[in-house]
Amino acid sequence: MPGKLGRRRPLLPDLFDWIESGVPPWRGVPGAHGIRIEERLTDEGYCLRAELPGLDVDKDVRLDVRHGVLRLRAERGEETKKRHHTEFRYGSFARAVRLPRGAKEDEITAEYKDGILNVTVPLTAVEKPPVTRIDIRHGG
Image (cartoon, rainbow, N blue to C red; front, side, top):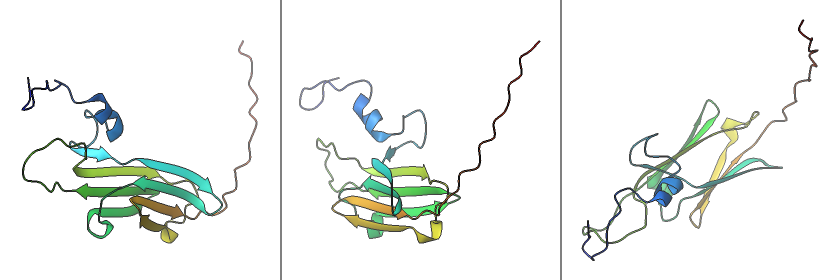
């Protein structure tokens, strides 16, 4: 069906929208988009960087941890009254990640700068359990 500018609108949402959202439309919360993240382990602990441009972290972003899962939620409201072409994402955004063993949940710090949220989770030294070799018998 042609749009106002004579372009045909696709019958299905753009494939890249599905990929970028991180949540396929048949799973998860309808209308919730994913948040792009980077994770790494450093000498300071577990570090997560989340891409959240143009948000007011005091009003629009919530970060919490419970039972070893770090949850990040954000919401961006649309500012215009008339509908124009936009590739910005509006609505709810969510992401949850399981923290590594030894995470000190009560010592997590977060800083927001230039559209990037940096979260640092200190880790305790976790000893690896000893490996026990199990003999395999032949059937027979």
